[in-house]
Amino acid sequence: MKPLGPIPPGFTALDGELAIAGRKASDLVAEAGSTPLFVYSRDLIARRVADLRAAMPSRLALHYAVKANPFGPVLAAMDGLVDGFDIASGGELTMVTSAGIDPKRVSFAGPGKRDAELEAAIAAGVTLNLESEGEAARALAIAERLGITPRLAIRVNPDFDLKGSGMKMGGGAKPFGVDAERVPALARQIIASGAEWRGFHIFAGSQALGAEAIAETQGQTLALATRLAQESGVALPHCNLGGGLGIPYFPGDEPVDLALVGARLGEGFAALPPELAETQFCIELGRYLVGEAGVYLTRIVDRKVSHGETYLVTDGGLHHQLAASGNFGTVVRRNYPVAIASRFSAEPEEEASVVGCLCTPLDRLADKGHFPRAEAGDLVAVFCAGAYGASASPANFLGQGPAREMLV
Image 1 (cartoon, rainbow, N blue to C red):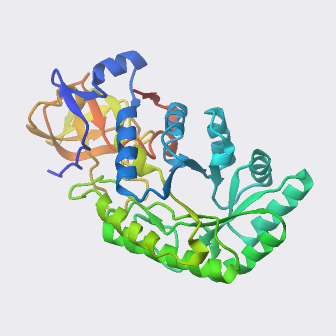
Image 2: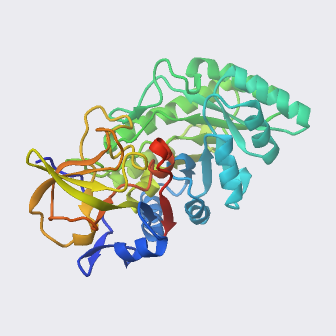
Image 3: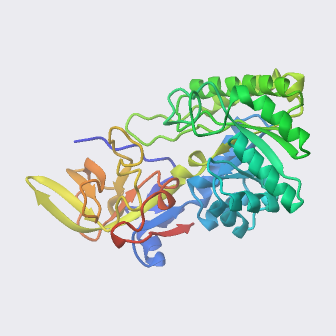
């Protein structure tokens, strides 16, 4: 038997079933029309934002990283909760503007921006986080042709990374950002061009649970921003400190100690040099804001036994939940938090593996977990499904198509 990940707080049982935002899973599926279905809780998202603001220094602005979950109703809900949005493609720019979000509250990072994406962003008034000297030259040329003053920042490739992070975004050779030692010269060039100088974007890593490591990295980021501002010869208007806060997915994972992170960042803000005295600081978070607020519901279509092992075969799978299947960057596959939604109050009594409907052995949502006995027709819930689920999975693999989504 293999342990399951921890079910996030905020979920309860109603008449023995999993309840999301006070509504039974079966009722939500009936409203949607069928499974598979992603359900996102508006209340849990708002609660997470409120908890974060309470723990962090009041000076710190909060941005939402759209790549975590670009579902239109989620973006619209976020519009009233956060201070800004961070995008990584022209497609995401269309998504945020379609949700009614002011482009001047948006910044655009990511390597390989096409000229058409740069032009759309400049025309809309989006801040571009430039990833290279070449991208800077293209952006300035496009802005001159359009007759628009572009809003330009530099994404910095720091000479450190976030210890314990799931994905290291800085330190050493990286496709992301401009190496730190080359940043001051590029900053002076941008300022001399007449562009609106928007400062630095410094992102060292993501999905970290260690508060000490996060706090240490934020301290290093403030020190780097100070040095680069001094070498650039101009006060720093804005600094994106990146994200990095992770959520517990696997057995043994513990949540980030927000109080420690907030206290240490407050100490850093209290000791800022003159170059950063008026700087606007933000962090960009995606997974941390929405990940635990989402549940993926899929229905068991078959119960079978093979060589003594029980398989619960569902109508969902890795084409919607690539990460839960262990195929989205995980080196050693471990179980996400998974439950039998139809029997949420029942005690576990058997070992079973939850698998999807795809014709591949990779399509496994839970491996030898301990569950209540479940039958065909029962609903399975995969938690921590609010980030990097629907939009980060190969929905059209084997012609399956996307899952339904709803915000409740």
